Length: 237
Ligand SMILES: [Zn+2]
Image 1 (cartoon, rainbow, N blue to C red):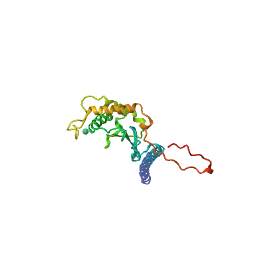
Image 2: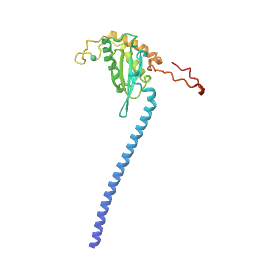
Image 3: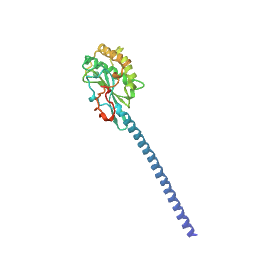
Image 4: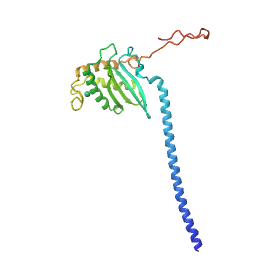
């Protein structure tokens, strides 16, 4: 009897240990399976992201320092794209004034437009959440708009149109134009700002290719050897 009891107890202990181990095992297996799923999802996501960026980068990633400002027109351009972790950041060049052709903006106009446009952009129902930064260029020919996401000029054209439409008709107190909220609020001229905004709006509502894409530098390729039979004289300059 005692023998059977011992056996029974041993069996019970064994069963308990087995159940515990089995539970732990399933627990470990489940955790591993979830991790593998999660990790493969992350890998897949990064693979797609890199593929898309590679595909787009040939056409879209344009470092602004390579742009010939003598050939640049006013317009809305993709200045550059940066990748932060798994996020693409697009910097737009909002060029209100054609460099070395139009007079640059007055600082009072730049400052007023900065306040009005930044407020409008950040409050836009569709795009506001994606606006990372809006601010003037030091040369006073335009502004930079930095957006979270991979976008083209055409993608945000309606947003920028709306913004400068709003600025060109702006009436009342300029947002944030008090000594408490701004570093030099006396340097603002609403009438100049409205004129500059209207001028830019008129370009945006009927943009040509030259107003949406940076000028591309084309270089003539070396002439093909005569015996290859290919003609290479119709290159666009
Ligand atoms: Zn200010």
